[in-house]
Length: 266
Ligand code: ATR
Image (tube, rainbow, N blue to C red; front, side, top):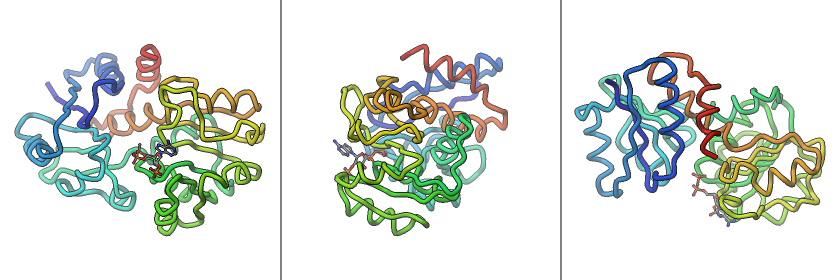
């Protein structure tokens, strides 16, 4: 039996266990996916002791994505993003990955959206915002990074090629000339609110929201009403999980099965 899991705090409402277990069942794998919710003071002990405790791989979520950089070796991409969301313990030296990058790329690919040469607006400069901004820039997009705290968007923009930083008050104007709009903040989670003025949305936009509770956030609803193509938050969750699964097992993730499992809970 192989054990994988998610470490974060809180993790009680995570859909990752359902998503990964569905993949194991479908592929008849003898594997289990657990959740760990330690205090920060126990993080080092749990990470460094994971292999001895029979853990083959861990996903890492809020608030530990940066802290674990001290305990495992990040690969090149995770180092560049400055955050780890996946650890593989199969080698002698555990390796940290950031699958949010490929997860966001695969979400756009799923909808056949070409990112090259596009004007993209990313709202948020936290872990998810960083991964999204680097991915869009690597794919050839011009990236406008918009954040409530402008010092954070400025410092992120300094390390992302072809990007510029803005404050929330610039959003409506930026969206006029944008092709892609992504919300990576938690705004809209469990509340019918959005940082994006509905009147600024238009039918030439592709709008992605990383929030998946509710599935149809205020932003997604407003975007649909404007005629934009919308990509809900489950896709990002799904594809980052699929990438982790593939790193750990070497098998193609059964994404349709995992997608159904997640959506059945929402
Ligand atoms: P994650 O790793 O999921 O990106 P995070 O690192 O806590 O989470 O980042 C949260 C992001 O959401 C930040 O960009 C944050 O803006 P600040 O840098 O100004 O804190 C943004 N955010 C959270 N709540 C917000 C709110 N009510 N209004 C605007 N932005 C908000």
